[in-house]
Amino acid sequence: MPAFKFDANTRDYSRLNAYWLGQAALLTYQDEAGVRAHVPTWGLNALSFFNQQETQAFIAGNEAMLILAFRGTTNLTDWMTDADIDLVGGPGGRVHEGFNVALNVVWREIWSFIREQRKGRALWVTGHSLGAALATLAVAKLRLEKDEPVNGLYTFGSPRAGDRDFARAFDADFERQTFRYVNNNDIVPRVPFRALHYSHVGTFKYFNNRGDQQEISWWDKIVDRVEGRIQELLEPGLDGIEDHGMTLYSANLERALGSGQ
Image (tube, rainbow, N blue to C red; front, top):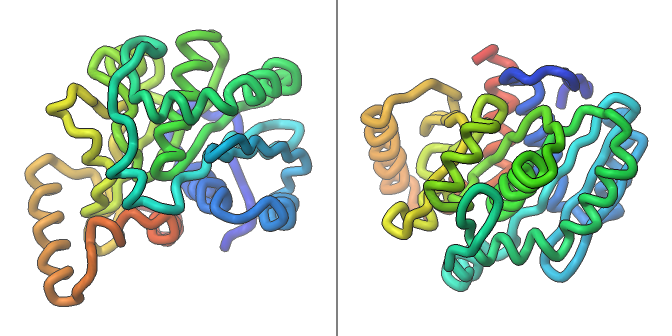
């Protein structure tokens, strides 16, 4: 792992920031003791946890910046089959009811922290899987409801969090500072389905079946996913689930950082 460096004040895409926000998203899967042991090695001396019901997040920072990271789910199958996918009113449009409920159980604490303790510091938001959806809704609340500055949102393996009106309002406000990573055949970004009026937000970033980051057309994406499926036949496994793991996203982010992609 490289030494922690972060361009706190940029509003442009950054491979360096993507890598470290990916590390923060990965770190959310550790317990509180593990996070407390790790964060100081990044030179981040402030740390607060938010843990209510099944929703977990932390804010870590120093004098220049804050990172808000949301944890994903540890039981992907249950979440994908049992989540309440009804659309309810949200910032800029309608949003996934289950995601909205999950965020709201910690939202008051998070907003209180940001309002009282941000003190002009750059704010970055990240998450993986379910945590990516919560991160997206948190940024929507901060931007569209509170008019609170956010430097960037980087998500990994994110499901769709809201409907087309939500996506249009979000992108009109924040598309240029939102970067949504998808790894090859990752199944989670395909749910909830477009047929249910859900839509993605942000700028699309893609890892192919070899783990390389590349700009890709819709046709190339189909071809690459087919190649991933062929690999699955040769090496049996659930490719769509395996490609969703944050550990694999992290390895690909490090590969992209090292190769200058």
